[in-house]
Length: 168
Image (cartoon, rainbow, N blue to C red):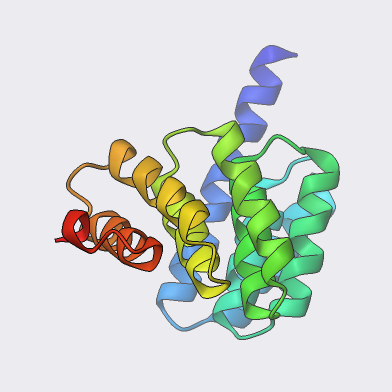
């Protein structure tokens, strides 16, 4: 049984790579077919659902991407990738509160998720939450000390909070 599941995981990974290659070659319809087939064959696994949600986002279909991300989260609520793609879909759909909640979920699961902290800082700055933005930006900077985006957001958070001297 263990060997069989290992073979299935390898086959799934190979199909995901082929779907990615199809996208890279401009054959998105083929990629969707591969992903849909994987989802049908392995409905309990979330990798194909996450890949499909990312592809839907890339194609500008944020509503469908959000639905696919929700399906993935129903199967694994501890997947940082599923929460992250759900957050990206929420941003595209103009649902900032949902996006913030999903990015926060990512950071609870993966404390080193720099991109999620960066996105949180941006969302919080957009709603004038300087302290919240600064906290998220500092987490991003701690996780990725060489990140220009994190450093810029720390400075923007300090500036928004009125700490101009420290922002310099």
